[in-house]
Length: 111
Image (cartoon, rainbow, N blue to C red; front, side):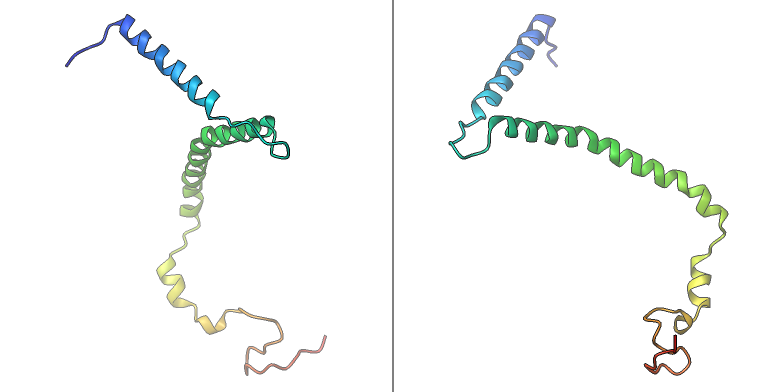
């Protein structure tokens, strides 16, 4: 395996910086008279870079929030298999309040 020396690394780093600046500078097309301004394009690009940088932080924050909620959920003693099989689904009040639970008719309740 060949290791590069410090001068070679600095030269390659300068080439990368120059090439990146070249691409960024010449990738911008001149807008037509009624097109968007270069300032609008630059602000959109900066907003995109900000989202790119912040997205890993948002993912990490979501994971940490989920991990932080685990002790709370463990302390509630909810057993999902027992709960879902013990509750008859017909007893749940899902639907509009005008449905009668006993007969299932559509009679409106007096208010």
